[in-house]
Amino acid sequence: IGKLPLRGKKVLITAGPTYEAIDPVRFIGNHSSGKMGFAIAETAAALGASVVLVCGPTHLKLSGKTIERIDVTSAEEMFEAVKSEYADADIAIAAAAVADYKPATVADQKIKKKGAALQINLEPTPDILKYMGEQKQNQFLVGFALETENEIANAKGKLTRKNLDLIVLNSLNDTGAGFKTETNKVTFITREGDILPQELKAKEKVAQDLFQFIQEKLYA
Ligand code: C5P
Image 1 (cartoon, rainbow, N blue to C red):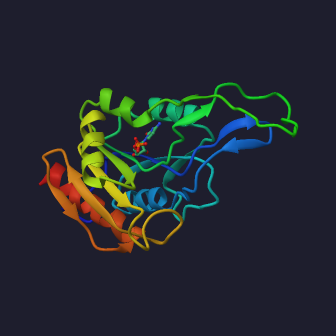
Image 2 (cartoon, protein in one colour):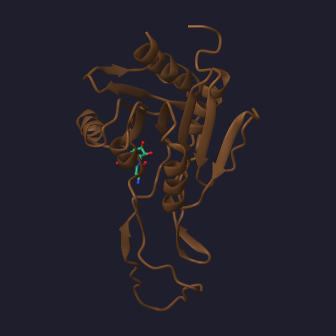
Image 3 (cartoon, helix red, strand yellow):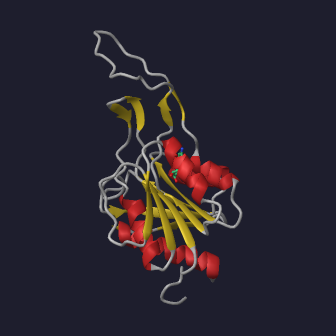
């Protein structure tokens, strides 16, 4: 493995949350900061890859200029961007916290407050990672999972259902892991059934170890 082991490889990454509009001023979102996905993008670029980062709303900035960044807002927009970038990717890593549901209709005007309960009907958003699993040719496909119970079993189920090569499980039960933190504690679970718990470490280091692991799988 040389100094730029991913030179000539295209790495597609999704990062950040998605926002699903309720009306012109409100949305359904989540606490994802995008930090893990951005760390993965920077690491891939440092290893020489050609990187496309599809990211939901975030204030994060990239340090390098070599990353192609596609900003999106909703799950639907993220899906469109992924559809156009996935086919020629060599490695695809889905680190985005995509909303699972969106309002079935978006109100044209700001919804007025009334003195009664308000119902908003939700419908599922596209499962972007499932699409990538279904369309997979030679891509090495990595998903993330954040589970609060039966973590290993749920993550393994996701890996199988979405036809992934590797799933990175983060636990909300570990301090220093998860949303908005600088560190993460993850477990790598492979298609072959290996379960590899990692130490708590900086998200940058998690990203480096992830690519080390992928390279060993792909090019060893
Ligand atoms: O099923 P769940 O949402 O927990 O799976 C998490 C993984 O799936 C993450 O890698 C996430 O980026 C991806 N995902 C996606 N599209 C969705 C939902 C999740 O790509 N609509």
